[in-house]
Image 1 (cartoon, rainbow, N blue to C red):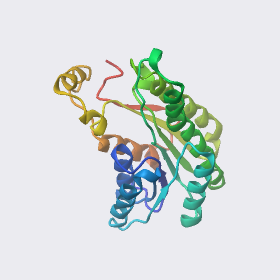
Image 2: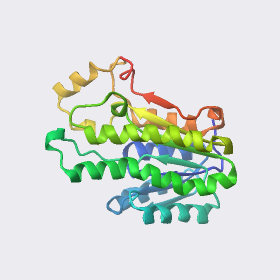
Image 3: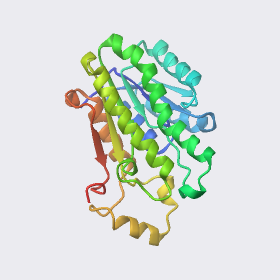
Image 4: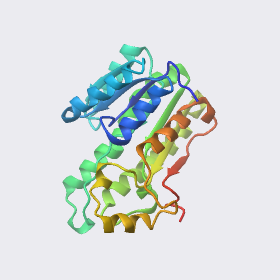
Length: 249
């Protein structure tokens, strides 16, 4: 699979899964616009520098993707710099875990805005260019939690379930113009969040995963590259679980 000279935008790509996705897209030939919030600017620029070291072009754009104005600036900057936008990866996300009886309005709104509204805003903005090109790939990072639910994550599960519904709707709206829209539902991935688990919590978690191990950000990145490639041109409106068998167990 190769994406030579394709232009991708990856939101939330200063670290973790987003960073792995951005680097993998560059590895297979894409020029990549990396994005995160202002607080992650230094890390974001490091990712862009790593991409440039691969002899691909990269631009680091700090923006709050839950803001319509910031999204417009992000996408317009990408399009004016590279002349096109071919691939959008909606990866930006946060968690604010709490039992629903104790969950504040703010925790609910923050997660829904960053995890779901951002995918809507970014997709709407890039479609302007993809429709003219009659080619585009939209890949949104959902979660296994959006499929099976999880105690203490009503906000996150709702947002990720919404990402799946959004993806399937987009696929039906723009498929006739050569644009595909798919979602990836990662399970538990080795990130900063899972590093905070103690040994007992980790072992209990592993018992829920048929493959018996956590995934890596690279596992998710490989799936993104496939869905963004020509090899996946007849796949749209789908959810690909990257979860070690967890959702089906």
